[in-house]
Structures are given as structure tokens and as C-alpha cells.
Image 1: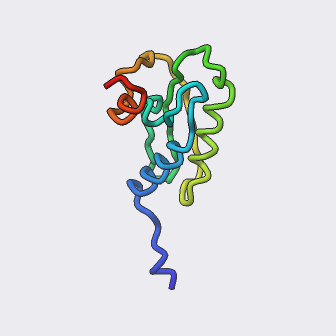
Image 2: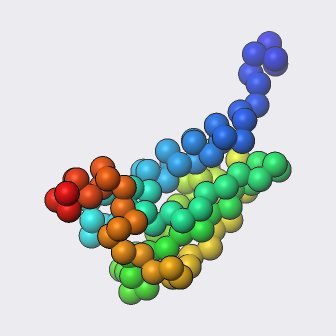
Length: 110
């Protein structure tokens, strides 16, 4: 029975973590933060820890104090991930070119 419940691969964990991040939204823009391009890196270590590097649309973003922790908690809650560490960076600064095609279309930039 245990063999049927095999551990997820690191890539599966990364995909699950990305799906968790896609449930986080910038309150001023009706698009999830992954599609907005706010996640610069999301890696899963061999020890099954998540390492996230993200930015905000602005250092003065009204959710600067809460959004990063929401992201970290949602990723850490993914089954199979042991710990999640998150760094917020502002270099390079975010701009609308970092958005996915889907986000640009949804916001009328295409």
C-alpha cells in the first residue's frame, strides 16, 4: 500500500507550489501574482524545501506587509514541502513586461 503512495518528484512539488501561488492576488490588480510576474524564482531543494524570490509591483504596495507571508504560508502548506523561505527583492524592479500573455490580455495590454 505504501508503494502506491509514492513521494512526489521535485518538479511535481514545484508545480503544486506554483498552483498555490496562483491563489494569491494583488488587491489592486485582478490577476494572480504568478501571472503578474511577481514571482522571480520558485525552487524546490533536494531536501524538499521551497525557496521563493518575489517582488511587489511597488515598494509602497499596500499589501507589502502581508502578501509575502501569505505566499510563503500557501507554499509551505503544499503537501510534501517541508519548509518555505521567501525573499522580497526590488532588483530588478517589476514592470508590466514581466506579466504573462494571459495577464496582459486580461488587463487589456494586448
